[in-house]
Figure 1 (cartoon, one colour):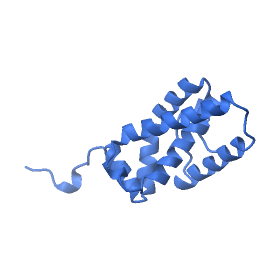
Figure 2 (figure 1 turned 90 degrees about the vertical axis):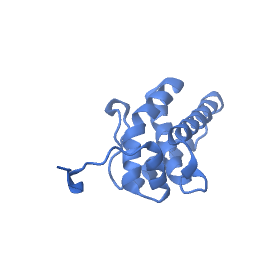
Figure 3 (figure 1 turned 90 degrees about the horizontal axis):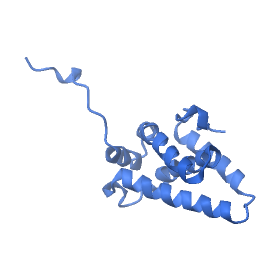
Figure 4 (figure 1 turned 120 degrees about the horizontal axis):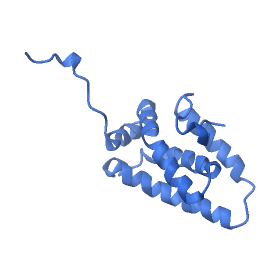
Length: 138
């Protein structure tokens, strides 16, 4: 006897599917995307930067950039994981240049702005991640 379709649980969405839904401005898809990738992104950034505080700021900036860039033409054809990895690499390199050079006074203000923007995209839902790392918005 076949299973009625209303009882069939759909399989998990791929990262590429989520990127397409984010491009259509679906905040629920963005939340799932964030929860799926934030721990790995944070770990990668933390390893590169050597500490949790700058890694939190860079991780937030990565996801805000994903939200901003997803609607652009061509984003639907990208490999979602590779795209995020490229954003992580660029954002991490930017932060390393800031650390190596004179500390800009706007970095703290910008990090706070990015934090509030990420919280707004997630519609008040606190960002999930490593609680020890403080991925909750400031």
